Length: 237
Image (spheres, rainbow, N blue to C red):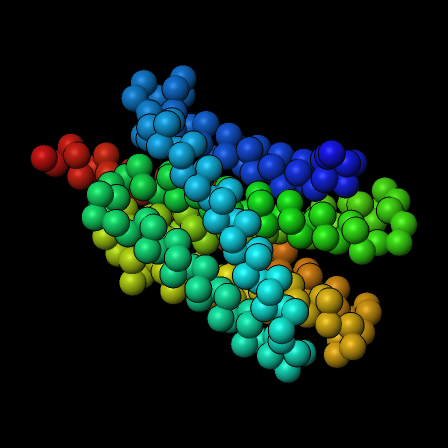
């Protein structure tokens, strides 16, 4: 039976992902444009794939945390970041998606799908561990979870833009760097034995700034410039 914590966790993961998907794509589909830049069926197929992959990623990360000690946390953060971003690259870099504009939009859906279930699972675990849940605790936990939606949405889209441009080597390292930096700063917030409060809050602030910047970049720059360049190339043919 679905309980209150599961419903709250699902809302924390899927509501932000759906809102970001609409907010980011509204200018690239009907009625804003006469001819949409992507196929809705493929978009939601990638979103569904991301939901499944998000659970797989969470399972691997949870297993890694249980078998590793504090001294290996840094290696795990970097290792999982590399594994996850390479997995996204393998999926998006199939020949059928290379140098196609719509790949960037499918990448966004894939990343938000991953982020939604990673957030759902993390928020649910966090809430279970709390002895009491008040409005402040719930808000903090949801905020921590939503950061994963922003991180996976932005890094996956960056890789998708690179595939669409035929410049994976230029975009993949940036996505990986954002993921690694976010992971290290995020984990520092919980490493209270090493970084006691309130100093650990700076790590969370840094992680937040990184993913907000990354998502703002793909929304305001990467996708609009990609479309602009594609239109310019089309007029030259």
